[in-house]
Image (cartoon, rainbow, N blue to C red):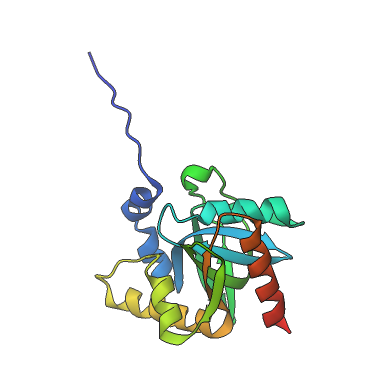
Length: 186
């Protein structure tokens, strides 16, 4: 008698087992632990450790702004194409169950933290790279991959605003970020 054991792989385990993060890094792309939405034709990614509220913020945007599409609740891929930062959907969805194949220019990266009130500040330079890097899926054992990822993050942070948003899990966080994004575009 043969006993079949059900084996479940997490998205992270699957990514590592096929070497996707390595292959992407060789091609100047990186997987970011993030929720990814498209708003007004551009991508906004919310990145933070698990349980911080990435999917909550994505859902709040979907509920409170027109023309918002949630592309992925757990991961996205960042790249630069002709010096334009881009964000791509990835076919691994985590607990959200959402994984769409969409690629758009990157409008902003939002590093989330839970807070007792809403506060936002723009991150620049090494601070922005460090905060984003901490949520990237990387293989630190390969020097060339690390160099590619760090250069990619430097380029992205020079071209795309990165914010630290300490926030409440309600529509007031959406309003603050939306106002900030529109103010920075002027």
